[in-house]
Image (cartoon, rainbow, N blue to C red; front, top):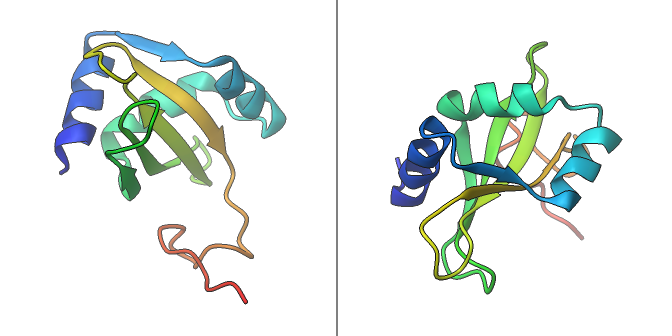
Length: 109
């Protein structure tokens, strides 16, 4: 497990979580319940990690909804802060852009 994912899980356990305005919009756009995302964090798989992102370190995770459907969730910690963890965005990955495991991107031409 990555150090960042460990930090995010710890903050989640302490209920130090915020959902960004963009995150709320994307949850609604893809009919994803915030509770599904919160409940799925412990079993999430790392897709990509962005430790040097200019707004603070963030990590893209593969999670699943209550029906087992894949969800990509971008979690982060604001630059220069140790709390809270922020759900930046969440969406249902496009199968045309991702392999069947939804962890590896397909090559683009």
